[in-house]
Every structure is written in C-alpha cells, then in structure tokens.
Image (cartoon, rainbow, N blue to C red; front, side, top):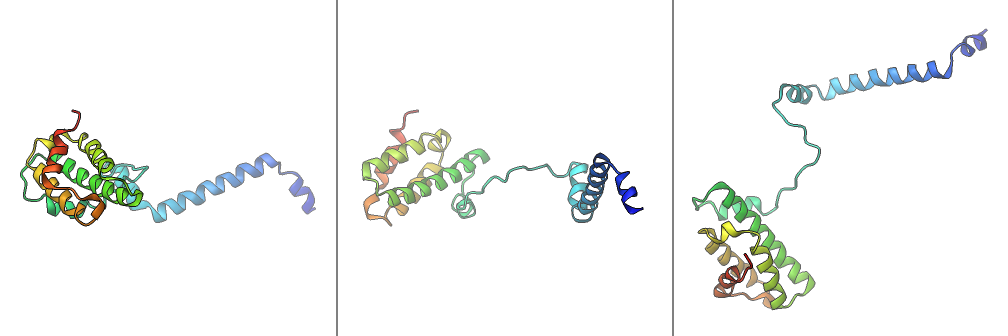
Length: 156
C-alpha cells in the first residue's frame, strides 16, 4: 500500500515541493536574522553595498597631520590619499631596493596625479613628512629642496 502512494508522486511534484519548502525556510531565516537591516534598506536609509572599499590605513593618522589646514575638502582628501601613496612608495622602494633616482622618478609619478595639492599649502606639509619618512631609510635620503623640486619636475 505504501508503494502505491509513493508511485503517485512524480519527480516534478517532488522537486516543486522541495523548492517551495526551501523558499519558505530562507524567508524565515532572512526575517529572523536580517529584519532590521532589511527594513532600513526598504526605507531608503541605507544603500546596498556589494563591495567594501578599503580604507587607507594611514587615513586616521593623516587626519591629525592635516587638521590645521583650511583647504577645500577634496584637496584635504587628496592630500591624505597622496600621503598614503607616498608611504606605500617608500615601503615598496625599501622592499625592492630601488636606487635614489628610481625612487625619485616613482615619487614624481605619484605627485603628478595630485595637481591641486601642488598648488595648496598642503604641499609644504607633504614635503616635510616625506623628508622625515625618508630619513628613516639610508638609501632613500631626500632633502626638503629635492622634494620640493620633484613637484616642479612633474609633467602636468
């Protein structure tokens, strides 16, 4: 008798039943664990983020470094980003054992991407920070006039 009941159920009906049960299960799980974020998303208070943008590790440190300047927000953000890239360039130059000329060309390439920082008061701060960071590495000694000259040697 039991065999007769199971033979009346087709594979299609079985799969539809399993899929409906799975759908209900996931709806219950979503409502239980993600109800608050889902409400915020539907209200429009939060945006859907597929990828997290990495935050520069030097960002919190550089906020203090550039806090005294009254520059437009974009220029301050550019200066923080430039500072992070220059710190990264120093560490890459030390790792790859770059010569002084190669390092200066690399720095010129990075500085070329930030023309607004070049024309702002933040230029002096970037110069002094670079000179102090480079003084920690004997193969990358960079003086203040050399660093300031790198800004003027850039292409644009």
